[in-house]
Length: 258
Image (tube, rainbow, N blue to C red; front, side):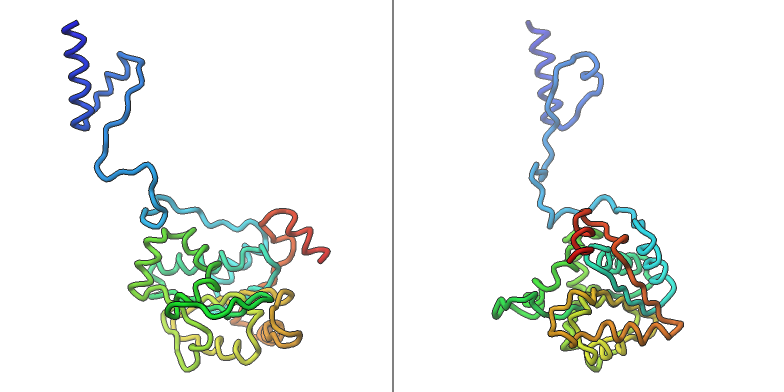
């Protein structure tokens, strides 16, 4: 009985001190709990953790492979295609890749603040708070490549910038990776203004689906801009198709008949 109590006391001491002897697991098949760790919680917050892995960025279709190659070789890329082809995700992933590799000094994200058929009224907060609902797809792509803690830190340092389209006139974006999302909701004049913001050592990727514009018919300038820029050899215009859709298979089926 005394030997049993001594062994039990030793185990308690090991657990209390945070030291476990692996031989104890071999000699006894009983399951023992892990030693307590200071500050550890079984319910970690996704906003506070550091991401310990990084998904490998691989194209899932020929169109995506063409888009990724175009971003690597051209300073201005227009990615046109239906929903679910990975236009925004690949653009943001390439931006993060360039920032982490030191190829650019910052990431600039821009997107027109246009509601999809309904008005949600005035939004409280500062500029970033007001644009947050519209930029949610870009944030989702960023958080998939970086932890939200890292995203917030980069935004605080100015390495990730939220730039409303209305405030872009007159700027020159040097040493930056610019992502313009939902460009089908931009007019011809807006797109012309955005494209001419491109500065030295910068890359700009413009994404959009000309068939899903929330503007009045004939107002969107994306299709016209893309047709004109296809004649410029230094600019890549990548047109994705239904075969490049990587969402649920029903998405491709719906787009084919809608």
